[in-house]
Length: 521
Image (cartoon, rainbow, N blue to C red; front, side, top):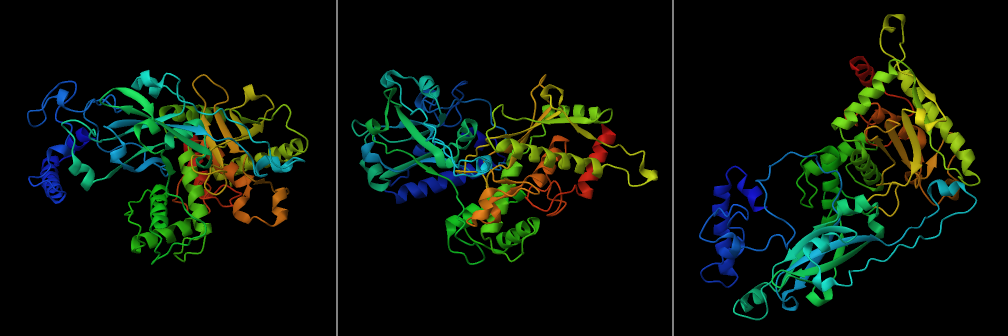
């Protein structure tokens, strides 16, 4: 962090201001001459031993490896892909310093509390409703914990990250009663979002575990032995019970909404918990993109639409070299022959589900047909334009595009639906076939043209809990063909990240973009 700071233009001016504020804050906290040195532990580069400032050497600074990081080259400022997910944090809040004897590195892990089903998804089409809970093996620390090294702790299952609590020992010459008097608690946190995503654990099923490592004695221990309470799971969470508009007083709700708006629209709203003009305008823009009334009030439908759009943007394939090469090969093949696709089925799908899969296959035929129609010449003068056609194959090895229904867990929701992934399109690894895999989340309450979900008849769930397969399939096929998600075409554009049940045909803009890609292939 400190080296990233040094890489920022104008850091010297900011550093001077930082030290001035540190002296002022230190004096106010009870240190007559200020407490400047305590704010800067990084005085030299750990590898080169080059002194950054002052006379201290690397031996005088903290053991950074024990805290989970080492020095490298100066960090690059800026760049990288904008984050689409709201962070999920493991937080150690207000830890009493008097209980913690010396600084500790805290290693955080995640595990799955277990799986269940609420009768939604494809299971709703079977004679039974729900499925038995799957018991997950409980997470346990190693039996020889005391002798574990930092490398051993990182290698434990479910490792999510490290944070540290800086606390002076309670005994010895460095004891500082003034620190405890003026700052009796300390806090720390670890972002576990990526760990949950990699393990496929939804936020609602996530269980946190943590171990401590004493930096002075180089000894691993339990949190109880370290005097640290267990971490709490926290993330900006939207409530469907609270509306947000100008004058809203629920600051946490507004902060979560502002972060979500920034993620979807790549804007730079100030995340301050206040609904000013910029936030109100962003709410109306979201409502316009989702074909909702533009009243500036973010209610359940606006929030659900934003969560679905955020999930779609997060799940969209990254435009890396592998994806570009797969799309190029697919489009080149399309100019010479029909693009072949197949639908993967389980060997024993269960009574009632086989008929549903037959109907789903017919719906997917319509989705591929919509793209063929979008590239079909409308007059003799346009016959020179490239076209594309598709055909079904029962053999997976012969297909260019594989479609399936699979479990797509997210890090934020107990179930998918409003806020979870409806589908995900990925490019195959090099040398694999088919080239592209489109997976629809089997946990969703999918509906076909003439086959509503059985739970709709109950009348207990509104439309936001049911999803038409056709518009989602059309959009995912567009991703497989190299088109990106875009807000440029409005609410009814095929490639909009916002879900719209009425998008059952390919928009003119998306059709023209595909023709352009075919010409360039």
